[in-house]
Every structure is written in C-alpha cells, then in structure tokens.
Amino acid sequence: MIRQAIIPLAGLGTRLLPLTSVYAKELLPINGKVGLEYILEECVEAGIKEIIFIISKKKQIIKKYFYNDIFYKKIIKKKKDKRIISEYKKILKYKKMIKFVYQNNPRGTGDAVLKTKNLIKDNFFMMLLPDDLIIKKNCSKDMIHIHKKNKCSVMASMKVNKKNVKRWGIYSKKSNINKSNFYINDVIEKPDVKSAPSNNAVIGRYILPKKIFLKLENQKKGKGGEIHITDSIKRLLEDGEKFIGHNFKGKYLDCGTIEGYIKSSMEISKL
Ligand code: G1P
Image (tube, rainbow, N blue to C red; front, side, top):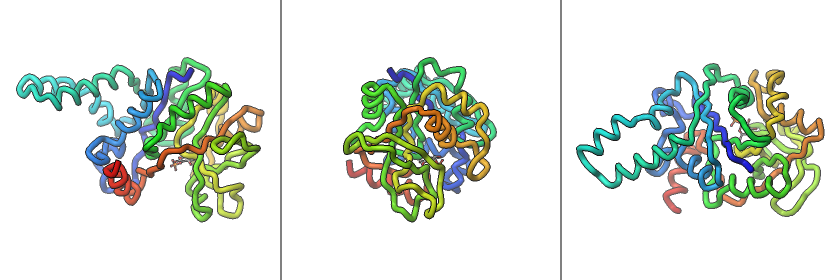
C-alpha cells in the first residue's frame, strides 16, 4: 500500500522569474486555483493519506497558506460566505495531512528526498514534482495500481522530442510489459542528444523504495553540481532493483517555465 507522498518545494523557481521573486511558484494560480492544489487533489484521489512537503525558510509562505486559520476565522465570522467556508474546509482537510521538513540549501532533488528519511514508514512511497501537472487521468492512481500488482518501483514516462532530451532524465528500456508499461534498464539524468539511450523521459511521478535512502546518503553530486534522485535510482537499478516505466494516459503540462505556465492555464480552462 502506498500511504505517503513527498513533494519537493524548496526550489527557487528561477525559470519563472519575475513571478517568483516574492512568491512561491507552487502557489501561483492556474486557471483560478493554486497550482499545488492540483497536485494535492491527485494525491487524495489516489488514496494517499500523508503528504510531506519539503520546503525552505525562504518558502515559508507555503506553510502559511495552510496555517492561516486566524485570518479565515475572522472573515468567516464577519461574512458567513459559503464559498469561503468551503475553501477553508478544504484547506483544513489538507492541513491535517501535511507534514513539513526543511531543505534550506537547494542542493538537488536527491538531497530533498533525503530530508524525509525519518518520516517514511512503509517500504515504498510516492514522490510528485509540482512543476509537472498531469490532467485528465490520475497518473498517481494508475501508478499505485501498477505497484500493487507488481510490488516494485514505478516511474512516469513520456516520449519527448529527441532534440530536447537534455532537459530530462532519460530511460533505457529493458523490455516491454505491454503498451503502457516497460521494465527500466537504466536511467540517465539530462544526457546529451548523442549519448541519450532513447527519447523516453522521466516525468515527475515516482513510486520509490525506502532502500533509496541508503543510496542517497552517499550520493555524489551529478549534472550541474546537484544531487539527483535519478543517479540514486540508477545505482538501485545496477543492484538489480526492479523499476517499471509507465507511459501515462493523461495530458502533461509543464508549469515550470513561463511558456508552459501560461499554456497550462489555457489547457485547464478548456476542461
Ligand atoms: C527533474 C528530474 C528529471 C525529470 C524532470 C521531470 O528535473 O531531475 O530527471 O525528467 O524533473 O520534470 P528538473 O525539472 O528538476 O530539472
């Protein structure tokens, strides 16, 4: 059973400047709703019971969003507005599920994951990267289903333009299971076009084994001087750990760049 999800939220969001100069990118509204709430909805609908946010001192605003009770209570007392009451109830529901850990130096996704080590209870847990929205079909739910059947790690996958492999983690396939799933042979963080083993990219939904912490504890810096989760996954694969790549059915929206962010609002407004 996958009960816990972790969400790295300590990134600086430089690709979205100036929107992120005083604000957290994950709180930017996408078609009238805070981006992070789409991710939380996906978790809740997939049956996740506890969500661990990895934030930083600079991103306390994210905690405040869920801990603004005095403000809400005052307004509700005065106005008794139905919409505000239901929004507040939703925030209270999320608040009960969320725990916070801190990553004050943004040293990479692998380092962010390591911060959650003492909070992970089961042998497997989920990770969602908030820049990656997947709409129309709940990717986490489908991945949890695959995990239940196969009792192994699962990662989301999408074919990308060969020219852009440098932007992603890239898989090499071992063998196909069916149309939507394959066994992963290897994974390389942001390879050059020439050395990329395929154009199957890692998208930000992972079911990871608790064992990954053993690798992360001595994970050396990789591409761009960061500690990458991809590099620790690669080492687990070398040890023979089974990972399935899942070609998800939903529509992918990249909220980590200005162009993608604008497009996301337009796409969601069409739903
Ligand atoms: C991260 C991962 C990368 C993955 C991508 C998906 O990169 O390191 O392997 O393909 O997320 O969005 P980032 O977006 O942090 O550069």
